[in-house]
Image 1 (tube, rainbow, N blue to C red):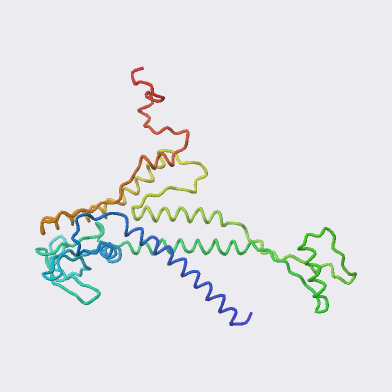
Image 2 (cartoon, rainbow, N blue to C red; image 1 turned 90 degrees about the horizontal axis):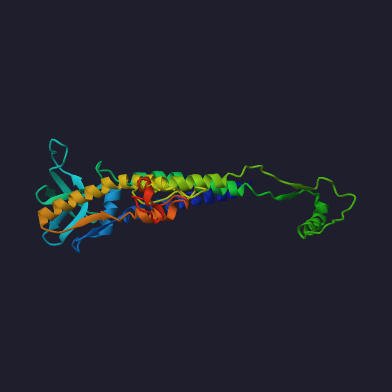
Length: 304
């Protein structure tokens, strides 16, 4: 194969790899940014930018500028820490070159979670795994092709074209010359096993795992049968547990900001409608009740 053709295939593969990776990265990134809602924030705060900073850097600082009003910007530490490792002095910074020296008396640091780490590493980790599965599926589907390979001498090419046209036209009988070789018409087979469906199911599980890691509700759509109630509750329980850290740290910052600046801001994740999720996911033979309510099934009374 000429080098130019090889380079074309290689560059096309690189493009598809990058496109798939970017797709999952941006989808997870955007979903992480819209998990919850800030309320009561001053108009001078860009909420999109605030969540972007928390997700990519792990912390931001809320403060009041004498000219610009309330701001929320990336933060870097500056100076000593207390005995618990909390910063006393810090600096608000901006991509435009704006900086302001702050401390615990005139600024509040908002942390992304209890570990004070960003989500971007989790997002890239899962995007890398998901894009790999996407490309495996593409390769496996492509390997299922079984092209017809026709071998012929130069003077028989036209004859073979006519033969194939009849074959492709579903003619029941094809007549050929005696000189037509028995092995002129062969099928090129890759013998690649069909695994795309299994890889797709695995990709769906990893996608749900990524959403759970970000505290976003999800359900296992790969199950051949509908989920029972306990399975739904377990899956949503993991989501709730994951939400606690980022939601609580934002709420702690809200309390400090409200006290320092006499505001009334708050943050809360989008509500989890567990009951509605159960109704959609549980199997038809699993009633929507606890076992302790067995005596009240079908409208019966507990004392009957």
